[in-house]
Image (tube, rainbow over all chains, first blue to last red; front, top):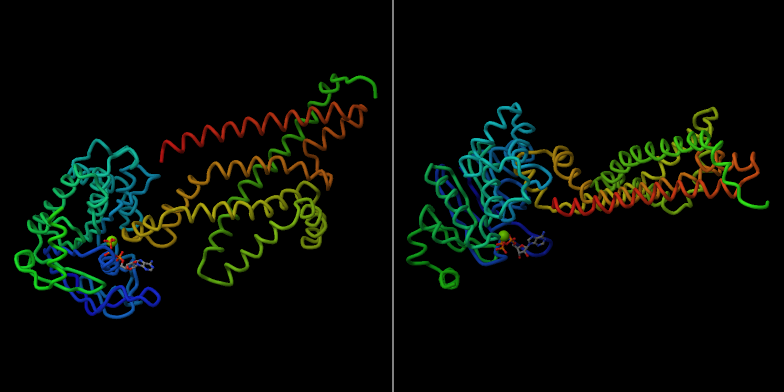
Length: 242
Length: 220
Ligand SMILES: Nc1ncnc2c1ncn2[C@@H]1O[C@H](COP(=O)(O)OP(=O)(O)OP(=O)(O)O)[C@@H](O)[C@H]1O
Ligand SMILES: [Mg+2]
């Protein structure tokens, strides 16, 4: 589903991605982790073309992201993305947030879009909040709306960039529950996260990045039980001990 | 001149009303036209097409560095050359103010657009929205919302500045007060009246802006 081959990227002189290769097969969950500044966000934003990259190829469902002939908006409409800071549109109600792209991008009728939005709100447990504005919701609720907004496009895969790291600890669970459910239903997901419990539960593989490099790409159990590199060991001991 | 005689206010009212109507029309047209053209200028200034950004920038800088009275006089002389026939002081004033205010609204909209976080653009793109759709549905509404108090304050300034059309003899409220003052030989009383009207309108508007600021602060 997602194929990343030898991707390199520079910001000016500094190389932020170094020859990165990995993949996510259909129905698989892959977790990406690594220290701050290691390039996780940059890599995941390359997958739907939010960030350009200088070398290598990324294909999603066989379509090349960096090919200038690719209709990027159309490809992005099929790839859902959930951000660390939710990025709901603050000037629109929850319902409007869910409806906008369904109507403007997929060409659905307003009724159809509202109905689909309502069904997804229901699914993330927020049916009665449709008329509210994002600012009136808690962080956990906002992130669940953001997931519903991505799902409303009927995506073929979902990208998550640290979906729980801006949340108060008591709200992390409600968001992870939704993500686990999606994973168990067979959604293809690439998740940047440090929630190792989530990784152990649903991830097929864990990708560990450091300094722009993919240092390890291993089956989940192997990664946790016997990380191959010193860097991954250090990272794991730091993250599991706080 | 003797004592003040404010009884002149009574017969002046129909003239003042007509003048005020023109002043309000000038303000509203220049505001809406200025905001529309100003937004387009802001988009041009922020566009990656360098020549376009340069031209828009030059226009804005030019307008912002010339005193308004000069622009009013200059347009009054130049517009007939372009259109081939005289257009009258009122039409000239409307064109001038729209063109002049556009430069100021441009800068307000530009900082409004820049005040919208990059993450919002990413979220819109990630949903498959195109550049124009993102601008129209996501960025501009937030830009206007963030800048609403500044946009309205600029409009209050505009309302006051319209009195400068006096320079080309357009019949705005100040001109009406002036004419009545001369006819009845009561210029001071009429200046006091127009000052009172300007003050009342501007003061209520700025109170309204303050209220609005509070409400916007709650929504966000
Ligand atoms: N717009 C930019 N211009 C220059 N350098 C950037 C830019 N964005 C990111 N970087 C750099 O690229 C590197 C990778 O950043 P990235 O945000 O992908 O890291 P990350 O792994 O997501 O970190 P975090 O865990 O803090 O989110 C960092 O060193 C960062 O400073
Ligand atoms: Mg990041």
